[in-house]
Length: 188
Image 1 (cartoon, rainbow, N blue to C red):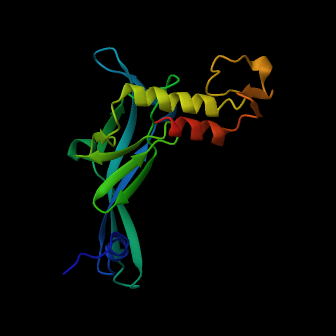
Image 2 (image 1 turned 30 degrees about the vertical axis):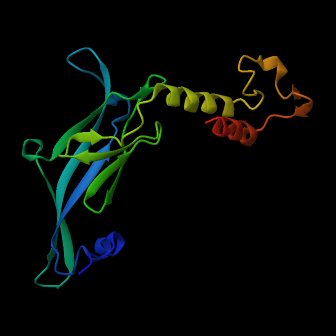
Image 3 (image 1 turned 135 degrees about the vertical axis):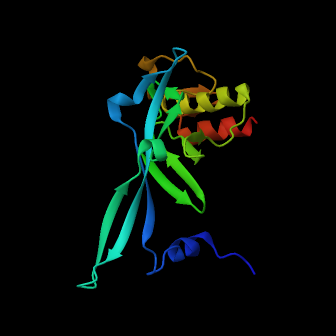
């Protein structure tokens, strides 16, 4: 028999008989997130907490009430996620959790990094190509997309020339991001 789709499994995960829930919470600790490791490297820390929520029924009224139980740190209630990834002097600070099936995934909205959390304390980013030429091309596209006055064959153009029409062969064109991206993609 085929396994049910994950969205249906998620909806059916808990029945009315369920009385114990595990909560997972992540926080990026704002200014306290930057830490120095033993080897002197600068890293960024987020805290992952696990706690229990219990739903109980009052025997007198028959109404449900909830009780939160904090799991102590030494019993697995708190873990620190360390990231060495930084951009512009600011590091990844994870502050959102999503569960996809059995995978716990966290996001950093500043760097765009998405990581799976494994073993409650390991950040595992998706595999990216380790091709330096590929990275240079992508970074070049990103930089030029941020500066619409530049053309692909004139990377050193000064800001004084912003918005000016540029000659390319016999044809005069005003640079657009789509044109630039199309040129970069067709070159590969």
